[in-house]
Length: 272
Image 1 (cartoon, rainbow, N blue to C red):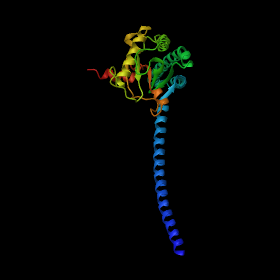
Image 2: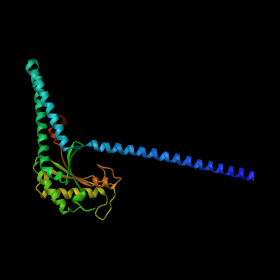
Image 3: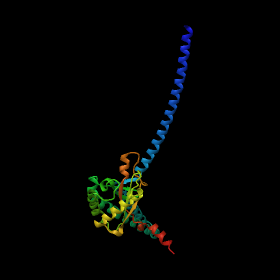
Image 4: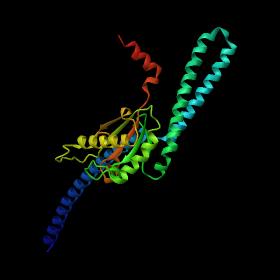
């Protein structure tokens, strides 16, 4: 009887040892998965932070420009005082004053453009039809593809035409500025008889929007089209909400590069 009990105890201990090894192995595997998940989460948080930092609302840009104008005004005031006190520096100071005043005038003109445009677009922004932000240093008007097109299609829906008509009424007042209409998709591949990939679809949609905006009075020589496919996302494509944000049309107000003195001088000096 005693030998039977000993045998049972030994058997139980052996089983417990095996079970412990299994548990330790499972725990080690769980720790590996946790570390991998934490690393992936950190990478995604970094990506989302970068995307957030790239964006700037129109109100924030207006505030930034107002601050820049105030700083320029302060610098002009200081130089004017220096110019009055130091006649020997008059030549150099006058040149600095001229440059600062020109820069201030340019900033004020830019600020007025944004204020006027924001006033005209505010109703569309408040209605949720469009979003306006600064991204990569440019003013961007975003429209969700779902407002403009059915899935995989390039024909404008009636509500899309209405939205673009209202947008054109605001943008065509800037008849001296150039615009780029950019088409974007999510990362789900498309391959149909009409579109072999997302590049084709996004470009065709951009062209469709350009042609419609021209019918609404925008100057054809001041507007162009481009397709980016899935290559310029503004959100993560891992869930449907992110994909919906990436399926969009952007109307971009192009910067006036010719107004930058340093660039203009560099281009002029490079000519033979």
